[in-house]
Length: 479
Image (cartoon, rainbow, N blue to C red; front, side):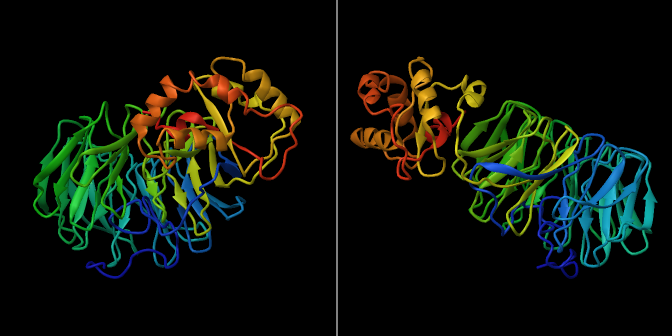
């Protein structure tokens, strides 16, 4: 329910603004994303990095900005519809209103309003860069922050200013709105502010120990969550601004949090970890990437979590923290992903591309050596069926690698029997017990497993077809 007017976004748009379909910036979507190892649907090249997070309209068109100063509109096949040029880098993510009009900020200090065909409706000047992504209400008002330290409210039809509120630092955080219409936004002065949407007057503020880049999210219990450069994720009462809890990570938090339908909260940190916390602020699990995490997570209808990392990958984890797949770009993935009605995911990278990814299709593997470099850091790899077919050439290579102490390959059904004999389930439970057995006992029983490996002359049937699966991601979390 939107107290401050009707639903403010384009009807039927699957991802009309930064963080999803609701003012509360939850990161939740009713659509299901890719579950299998993922392949590229298409990619679109710009001239400079893509840090802006895309929006998707009800026709499946995708909108985003680039550091090459251009704002782009693509169709669902990745073909260019139009561009609009500003005079500086675009980090701000767009929002699409009920008329299909598009709003975004630029490093040239302007907030822009365009028609769905890319024509300029109006632009509004501020005194600083606009990295903040704008927020709409149902009364025709638009809210955003600027590097000039002000929060602005404009009439979205005319671009005229309604009010502005001063803070003590630049505002790169994007505003969120609750069911009462109140506005919440962080500032580089270290404060989270709650503002009256009609007057711009302050309702409360809360100080942290560092700048706030992270954008807030608000759950159904009126709890607001956000990160700070003081390394903490905070939970506050959105009505009073009173402290509820904080969780300390190992570094600054740029990422904006999301929460799932069970009340769990998810956020990335510059310490390279992605965190899952309970609604009371206790750690449920954490997943290590190989780079800082600026990207803000999204959560699909099945509870799968998608986010990017500085290590060049887009990640998909299940709700228990297990890696389902990761998609490699060639640059820092600081853009936050968006998802459409078909379950395709769109994300930008510092390699200058916007990517569209989808579920991968089963493929026959004819050469295992291409995976060798990726496997060096892992102690064990196993295989199971029925997604990918292996031919004799692969089996020959498996036989060769099998004699190296770091590379041991087993039939999935035999591993299942092994865990069954030791009273361990195969559904991601008893993690510590599994880790202990895998590290201490698997080596001791290696000779017995060798008799079960495939020989070069094995006949490959559908039942014996196998899917490569990294041992660490199937049997243990990488943390």
